[in-house]
Each structure stands twice: as structure tokens, then as C-alpha cells.
Image 1 (cartoon, helix red, strand yellow):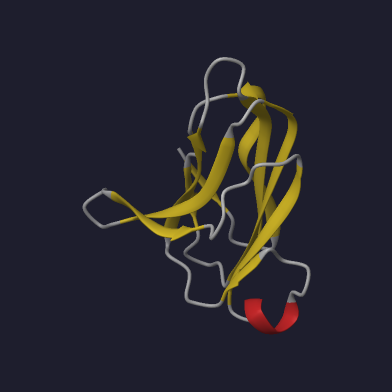
Image 2: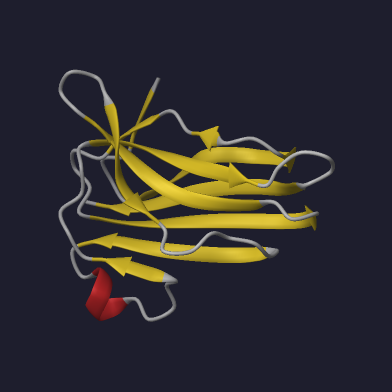
Length: 133
């Protein structure tokens, strides 16, 4: 299932999930008309030593998914973090955790990769993307 975002909009990439303890992967997001994006990840109610590392994968023409970007650091505490991508990311968005100023892939998906899960190690997770043409 592809979620199109041709105009400035917000897309829920990963719906709220309580007690996440496994890697989460969104459906495909159509970024053909997107010039910039902000990925916001919300983690709450941490239990144990679990961490999540956000990444964005792009889809090749043959359908294979490859990692396009991975966060510099795993998320290990409750809170909200935001990452800016695309044109103007470096110059204009001071409150971002990371700023990646490079052309955006046409088809992407958001991945939260888990580490240290099991035996009560979990987070509540949520991710959304704001996009601009």
C-alpha cells in the first residue's frame, strides 16, 4: 500500500503501538513530489534497556529495499525527536536532532530497528512524516 503525499501534509508512518519490542516498518511512502520532509519519532513508557534506531529505506526499481539513512544514535529515552531531510534542511531547521540536506528518494519507508528487546524491555512507539513539495 502506498501513501501519496503530493502536497504539504502529515502522514502517520507508524501508528501508535504500546509496548513495542520488535522492529517496526512502515508501508511505502510516495515521495516523488516531495522536496523536504521532517520525520518525528515519539517514544514513551520505556521499560528496561530497549533502544530503537530510526532509519529510512528507499526502494530500488527492482523492488528491493535498501537503507538510505540511519540515525547517528539509537533512541534510548522517552521523548520526541525530529529529523529534517531535503532542500534547506541544514539552513532553516534549528530544532532538529539531525539535518540531512540531500535529494530525497522517490519511494521510502520508515523503519524503527529494535535492540535489547525481550523480558519486559519495551517502548510505546509512534512516527509521522511532514512533507512539502
